[in-house]
Length: 177
Image (cartoon, rainbow, N blue to C red; front, side, top):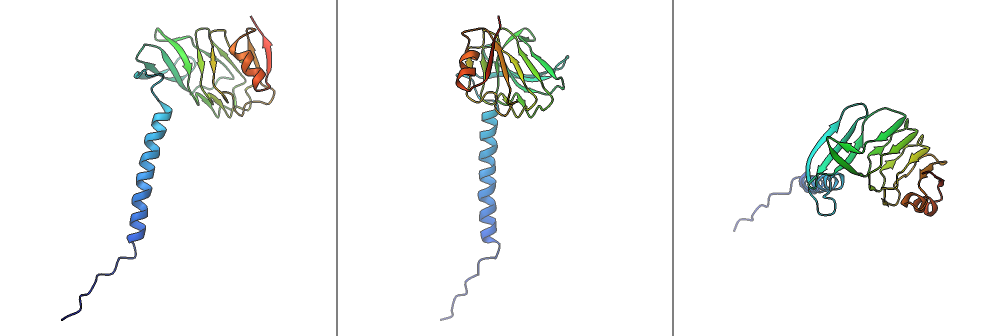
């Protein structure tokens, strides 16, 4: 009886298995990041996407109910006014990371009608020292203004969500309104 010869495993078999695992993990991470960037908000699905070009630039998503979520600021102004509407659709939310790594922004004025500011909406904006928040903003997520100027001042009406947020996170609050 002749001894059967077994083909030895290639020296690259472990590498190939590891590469397959990494590709699977990368695909899962990309799917998760896409979901986190543009998740359905409160069960409402996105209807469309676009970009405001004049004079300040925002990327945005139009939700199924016709409201707008601003997803990214791509302009270059030091003072930014967040619009109340886009193409006739009301802006309701400042999405997470809408202002990320915007080192030159000093002041953000949020228009009346906007209702929610998501977590980390203004992230790594060290020059941002003033935010004007209207009474219509009823929800400000934790860490909405992470890594902004240490002397950040919130201007808003007394009794507003902004006043409660400032008290909770030891920010300067100036009544306005």
